[in-house]
Every structure is written in C-alpha cells, then in structure tokens.
Image (cartoon, rainbow, N blue to C red; front, side, top):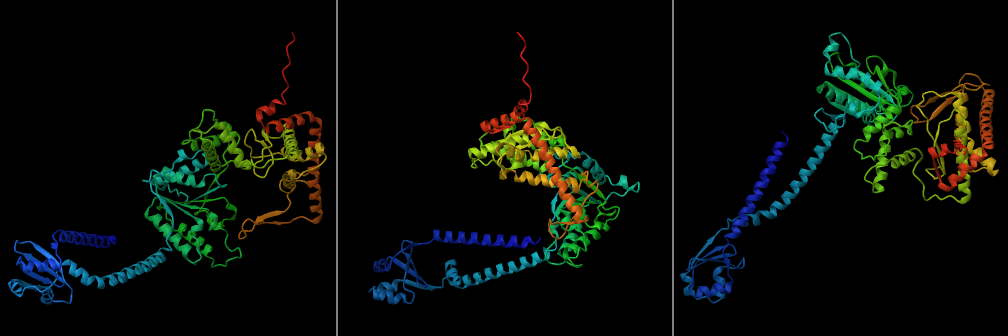
Length: 612
C-alpha cells in the first residue's frame, strides 16, 4: 500500500510528459509558414494582405487567398513605426485590419514559467533525495535489530535438499528421523505425553555436512528453514544480538512448524564468566537471550532449533542441559563406503570417462570429508577443462588427489642432478622401509616430482579405515618417517635439509606415544601434561605441567630412545635390501614416478622357467 502513491505519482508525471509532447508536436504541425519583413512590405503595397494580428513580437498575416503567414518583428518596436520606416503607402495601411492579442499558447507559458520552474524543481529534487536518505537511515536504524536469517521455504524446489542429496551419515539420519516425524505429525507424540527435543546439536569436523544435513531435515519434513550464523548475532552495539535473537524466534513462531538452524554456535555460545568482557558482554547477553527463548517453547510449539559446531568442548553448560540442546548428533569422517556414495552424489553433473573407478578413488582418500571430496572432483573437472577434454578421466582425479594432499606440481622447480639423486634415494628409502615392515600402509605411489614444499613424496594409503592404532603401528611408522634421513646418511655419508619435516613429524609422534598414549615401557601407562585451549585467545594452546623436572628429563630420553630405535630398524632394512633400494632409485631417476603396481612388481619373484 505504501508503494501505491508513488506509482500514481510516477504514472501522472509520465502522462503529463506525453500530453505535453503531443501538444508540442500538434502545434508544430499546424504552425503557419514564415515571411520576412521586406516580403511583408511588398505584399502590403500590392494590397495582398487583409489583416495583421500582433502577438508580442509575432505578426500573424492573413492574405486575401485565405492563407496565413507569420513574421517576426523587434520586441520593443511598434508595427506602425516599422512600416513607416519601410515607406509603406499610408493608403494601403488604412485598408489593413490590425488587431493586438495576448499570447496564451503553450509555448508562451513554457517560456514564461520555465525560468522560475527550473530552480524550483532543482531545489525540490534535492530536498526529496535528502529526505529519502534520512528516511533510509531511520529505517536502517530500525532494522538494525532485526535478524538476518535466510529463509528457505518448502515451495522453493530449486534449493530444496533431502536425504537423497546427503550420502553416508546413516546413524545421523536415523537420529534425525524422529525430528522429521514430529514435524510431520506431532499429535502422535503429544497424545502419548512424549516431548520431542527442542534443540539438536550437530557435532563434527569441518566439511562433514552438518549444514547440509540440517537443510535435508527441513526438506524431508517440508517445513520452512531459517539459517543464520552465530557471528551474525554479535555486533559492537550492546543489545543488538539479543534483539536479533528475539526477532528470529518471533519469525519462527509465525512460520511454525519450522526449523531454526544456527551455524557455528561456538561463536556466540562459548562458556560465560571466563574473565574477559565482564558480565555485560554483548556475546553473553546474546547467549542469555537464546537460552530464554528456548525455555519459552511450550509443548505445542513445533519449532526445532538445530545448531552446528566443531568445538562442543567450549560451549556453555547451560546450552547442553536437558530442555535445550539435549540431543547431540555426531558426524564422523566418512568411511570408504560412505566416501564412494558421496563421490557418486557429487559426480552426478560431471561427465566421467569409462575408466573412472569411484571405488578406487574412495580407497585413495582416507580422512577426506564430504567437502574435501566435492573439492576433489571439482579440481579434476577444472584440470580436464584446462586440457580441453570433454570428460573427466581417472588420471585427472588421481592428480587432483595429490594436489589436494600435497599441493600443485612445481614444474618450474628443477632439481640439479645431485639434488635429484639425493631425492630419489630419500624417497626410495621411505618406500623400501614401508614395504618391508608388517604394520605399515601399502605404498601407492613414489615420486620425485616437486609438489608444494616437498621435493618428492611417498604416498601411502591404508587398506581399510581405522579408528584405533597399535603401538607396533606407531613404531613402524617412526621407522618409515626416519628412513629418508637414514638413507641419505648411509648412501652419501652426509645429510640434507630435505629430511627436516620428517624429523619434526617423528619427534612429534614419539612425544605423543609417551605423553598422550602411555606407550612407554620406562615411564609406564600414564599421561603427562594437561592441555587446554584458551577460549578468548584463538587457537593458543596452554599446557599445564603435572610432572617434575626429573620426569621431563626422562621424557626427553624416551623420545630419543624411540627415534634411535626407528633409525636402527630403518638402517637394517636399507643395508639388507640395498639392491632393491638402488633399483627403486634408478627407476625414479629415469621415470620420476613409480605407481603401486610397478612398485609391487619389483618385490615379486619372477616365475621359474619350465625345464625343457
């Protein structure tokens, strides 16, 4: 209704402009011919003129034949004086009918009013835009406390997501089936006195599909979906966050049944009373308002609040008590079957070549989340497009896996012959020790092509997904990490900086074995140090020592003991299987890359020839 007067005003202005244009066109089409003063004098002397009408400085001349002409005289000069100056016969003048009229045409009014209207219109337009700016500022000020939640309605089929679009996460889907059924038919639960959880907390690592799963729940239940990030509540003005929370829940109640989704809940739901910001901190007021609004739900209110976080350990305890976020759904990293299903979902709109085996891709991507797999196929499609291919081939996907894990190829980084040889033996040492020990993952690829910050790499992938690791696996992994360092010392009698990252990772792994996993025979089955993250200092980790200096010295000795044992194991394998080490290094120097099948063939004995 507010837009109606504006539309009428615009329509009226356009109508007046069209009428004025039509009038000017019409008047211009009926305008008489023109004549100069000398010609007019000649016609008067020849008695061809019957009457002259004076309109300001215009002379409308009517001839005896009925035609009309128009002449122009000077503004301040009378017609009689003008004709006398041209020596017109006085007898001829007496025969003329001369009349004087006022100009009432559109042209007269335009020329008369335009000098006054133009400044007025300029001032009016300026005032109008100034008022609009003021009204816009006032409206923005009034809207500052409104929530910025994005709404996806059930009618929006283009953005609708269901469980068919979410691969894997079977247990999470089963947990959320109750929520969907409650939103569809709440009377079945209410008749039995059941109370459906008000809040559902989705917990999982980044990229595991928390937001996607929440949208799928709304799509399955066919209800509106309000989505907002926790950081959008908090502003520098006190009270704005709480106002936005109230407005969000007010909108949700008007659209009940519905789902309210808060992404990154830890941005506003961190523990209160941490000593910074005081009790009147804006973030704490926003959190308090969320708690109050969730308490305000009655049994018949069909609103489900879903939230996502990857840091449940730092959430305020009041959020997690029964009656608020009392149901927790954990989303783990997908296993091999789930990864294959996720790849199939993301490959729907990508033309794949016949040689693409998504099961093999799933085997090569342990630890990848759904977002990682989506990015992987996208990188493969980009690589195929750059090579002017019409379909995504298996080589594109395998190259994209290495790009995601290690970084892009550094083709401009050319190693010297000596560096290339050192790198070849370094990577051959990693691969040989990994192949020789029983508790290591299979080697899928060995390469001396630079990727990221690595001059070469040995790609190992597990046969199956593991949730637990044994001490023997860690000990063998230490030997593999230190194999490159040991190989350089044994072959060249010197060390390079290429093993620096291996040493760092080996030292970190040995420290975890002792201090976190209690796998030291000397120090026994206990942990050392209490690690906690300081909430208001980003990712800063604070470690509180709960052991003496004497124990710290023993820890350092145990770390050295683990590393020395790993170096000894690697040296024994390298010395015993020196021929295989030289063979692998020679192939790397020749081809730069060895795939799994070719690498395994080096360790498979050749079949014996049959006797003649």
